[in-house]
Length: 90
Image (cartoon, rainbow, N blue to C red; front, side):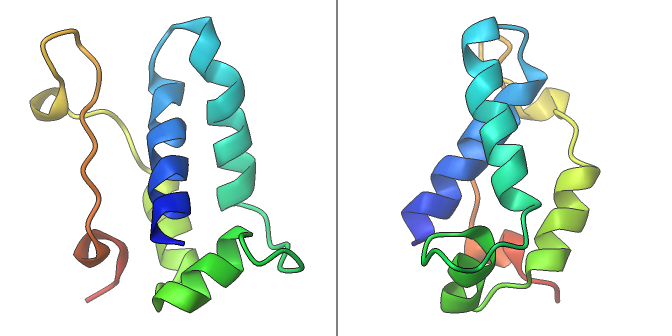
């Protein structure tokens, strides 16, 4: 489940890139994060529940997520490393 969440973050962050090939997956990831569907085991809310994470906290952070120049690689792409600590309110 953590891998599903991590992949969604990687896809979501692609929305800040201009390459068209990434945009579809980025939109899908964004819909996944902001959906309240819980029928499927791998929907966002059940994944958060299984990992002990707060969905609303993550959504709040995603709404305000912008690429940081310090997180760009040599090609100008944002490098995202997500830890469980980043996802849990303190």
